[in-house]
Figure 1 (cartoon, rainbow, N blue to C red):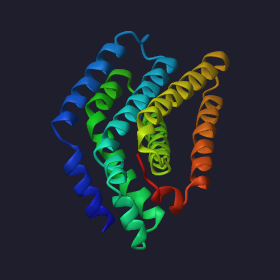
Figure 2 (cartoon, rainbow, N blue to C red):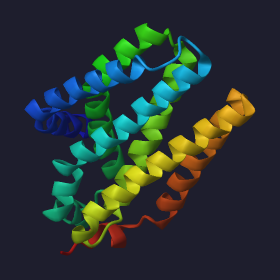
Figure 3 (cartoon, rainbow, N blue to C red):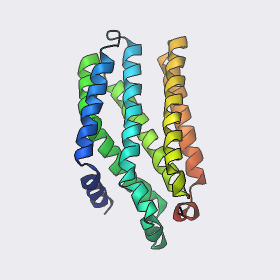
Length: 210
């Protein structure tokens, strides 16, 4: 059931705009990779964090035609009233938005992987970071009651992504300890996800107004 709904959402949001986004994502990665200094660890980290941030922006864009639209039209309120759980909603929208963003960013990710020769641990770091960004994005939108504040919410989420990017990279620059960089980044991401998840309930999700 949930896989079928994810597939329907993917067909809906992977349109011509997604192709254009994929092109600009690849172009951005190509241009930014020319400024990276060789195959150093810092260069790979900066590149992957940049791709994860781009993933967040793509996720925001794809959420407009799926999660944001369904919430504005009170479809989510309707399914909640019919016994659908919050977990089901999160899985549905996470699957659609995460896969759409990953598919769109895949050409850029493949190019970057060949350019910098990143390994499996670094790819896993990117996938987990992107997943936590996506989950946070979904929870924040679900918890938004006033849809007029959606534009401001998007700006705040992007700003949060920039701050996490700056903090994690600066920790690595000053310490040169990759484990500390990873711990600090994932600690921040897990913390904000848990904080928003604890505040999530059907009453907040079901209320939508303009």
